[in-house]
Length: 400
Image (cartoon, rainbow, N blue to C red; front, side):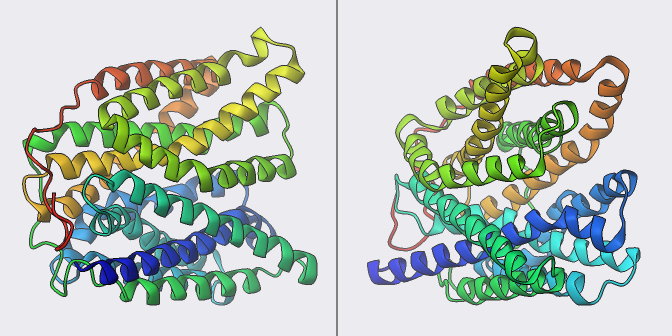
């Protein structure tokens, strides 16, 4: 790809990611309040909603497999943004009852998970050889900036007009459609479909294992980390919002830097270190209040929450590792899709098991088990080996 064309695509990709981040920030920061205020969801209903909401991620290998036969990754991303926009409009204007609420959330979630499957391959195609981690880190920083813009828009609109959820979701839909138009401008990868088959290879077994580990890590953070703060220590929503904002703001700077670290140290070191840091986070959640005075312990818990959020940026190391071991360039997107499915298979089942452990034995056992899994993950990541051959070339003009 000539330099001018590459730069044009990079600009479009960064702006698209920012717009998607804004839409996602609006959706994520308002969903729980929307469900409670507008549709009177209780805790049990909210818990069960996670099953259909995460189902598109579990089915992503089949959804992406069908789309890959017809579309390239940027076209899939544009379609995903249309789905996200439709889900937002549906929630804001076309959801009088619970059944339609669930349906529109599934539509939004489908778009969200298609993006998860293709954002890494798009970033790789827009990277120069040897700087893949940096490019993916830049895209992660753009998404974090977009999240801050979206959350800021919610705050401003709420101050000016009150809790007008239809207005929030209309803005989210506009941002998602803008992202879709920008994704359509990306020409990397040509005009043909991204792949013509699903891929399951023995050579990618370690990538599949790392994807399962990420599913465990994600669920610990999204459910149990925040639940310790809210349910056990009574942290108010204003403080949780401030922690989320702090982590997002740090991510604008940290994600590109961590991308450079991946290029510099390699995926083996970075992913192994990530598991050790996750181990420390789990131990902090389990024992901070036992070992420290409560005021100091709360600062440790806040730091663990923010650190774990920032370190999510290291998930891009999975994609750069896959590129380096890929046998064919056409393997990358379907293999990432299978990774999303494996990730969500864990994420859908873990809360049930961990909730039982929490109720039967106490919250510390949840984090002790998670710490044991993180330690096992450390040794799994130490098995990462990158072949001596150059990685597959992803785009014309970006030779290995």
